[in-house]
Image (tube, rainbow, N blue to C red; front, top):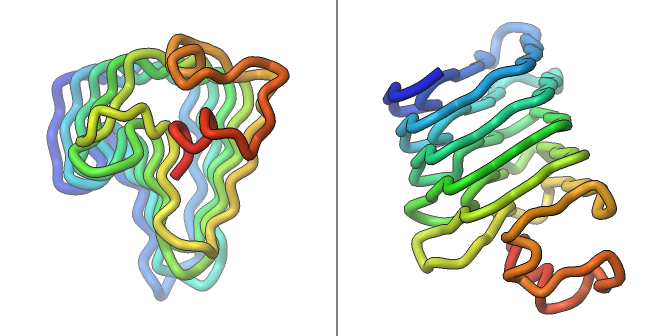
Length: 171
């Protein structure tokens, strides 16, 4: 899916309205290349409803997507599980080069098996995941994540999660 633009999710926006039970979606074996959006250069996953929506992103490739708020935007009462992610040269005009997570309703992001390289935010930092508030839950399987962005941040398989290297990737 390439070269699309929209205000929410350059290629895909899964939006749940407050008066309906939340939809769930699974996106598999898909490449998002060169998409542009305000919230989620490639994908926007939003939920205004009371029931938590769950989304699965499996074997997703993100290449050169641009968003003010990350390549993938996660908002409100949403759980997103990501595996088999390859994220290369994605750019955020604010924070969160790949993921921007925000809301007061405890969104959840689980990241397994990811390779990240060449991603950056407005300040030129990697900032792989931006967490806009303290209610979000982010679970990263550190031993399954690799790529040049981790090397640039100074992270190795023995790096403590509280190190300055991780502060370059998660804010």
